[in-house]
Length: 60
Ligand SMILES: [Zn+2]
View (cartoon, rainbow, N blue to C red):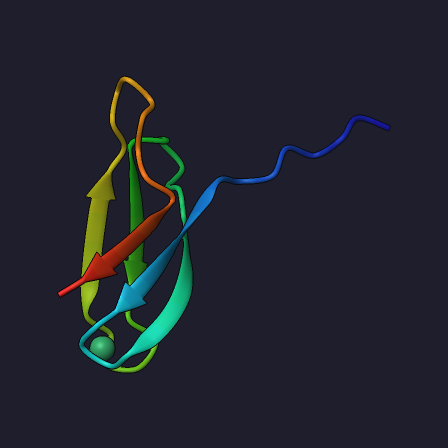
């Protein structure tokens, strides 16, 4: 059976509520899109076209 490719994700700290959460790449592969699990604040982190993006973010 072919192995299912794992969707890339990054770890994000939502400073608004001091929560850590994983955020997955969107379908187009252009950005990481997510929401704070507590206050539902939305955010988007664009993927660098050169591929050198961090795996960890802090949102202020
Ligand atoms: Zn929040």
